[in-house]
Image (cartoon, one colour):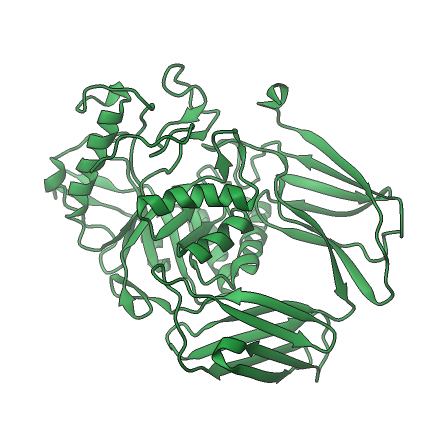
Length: 496
């Protein structure tokens, strides 16, 4: 609604519902996301609260619901605060409210609470599985089945309700962008059954290369926000996911950076089916209070929620822990804490962060970066807007990089703004023209040839997107115009 365009504060959602209660059955309310913090009330009592606008959470309501006449109310608040993620200033729209699906989930009393099933990081014939029941109950029988691979394996839980196994498999077709093969996986217990579609692939780093299925891969990526620009609102459905991902597929991408927060599960699952690798991150985006322990704990919980939701998606290649943060002891310890939180759940993905500290050293006549923290990362990523925020110190074809030597490097953001349909001198940055944007991309591509450890590029960004911090009245008017595609869904002039 126009009157709520810039509104930040509280909104209320409410509805009545009936539910058929069955003895021995448990009930949960599952929220895909509520932005940014919320409180949940059922029949006049607060039953839960959550902070973080992009990760799911659930609340058990088994003993709180009635057979009929239940009244559910949700208080959602998107007010920015200094101790939040993101914090006070961020370059995208601060959408508020319930932004994703809400489900009432029914389970048996003892159910399959969690599972982590994947191909071993380095072995192409070993599937590792860990399955958790909802109670610490030993000697419970579980069956893991992958029919297409002729796998049917019995497991028994330990005293923590956990069952683990490593299986040798034959004739497994590994998932890749060229062949995004998924297998039906069935997990069964005496009282519960889960069916999933899971892909299997190997992913690791060796020296300056990223290996997918034992072959070096170059990442042809792009980024997008969880937004449908044509309607100026959050992307929330599978149809929305198809619109965004289809444009990335037409561009020839094999990877998507889901900027700058965990995006809708529809997008993640559809991307996997379409053959995209994914980089997913939490919004540790500039301006974070790294000295605040409460903020650190919030970020740790947020990254755990992200990893827990998507750890079975083989498309997930990178967990991102930060974007454009400034070095300091407090920042370094904060990000190390996030990495530990990731690895407490999943040690198999690659850890990355997007840095913006590359500078041109006039003495060496090279681009360099001084940030020792990058040694904590599997893959180093750099945001660098040559030709837009930074003038060329030398001609692009002579721009030599000496950054993150010995590690794979991704240019995670580059580009510039252009207003759709605007023509102008391709040599003048202030023209805001498609001609200048196209020339800018050609120049950056020339520079990339001189980066010896470059293993991926991601132009920023696929679509123009809304941002209240973009004030130029003629060329921006509340939009970041760096998109390769306009806010109306029309493609801008190609750079090659």
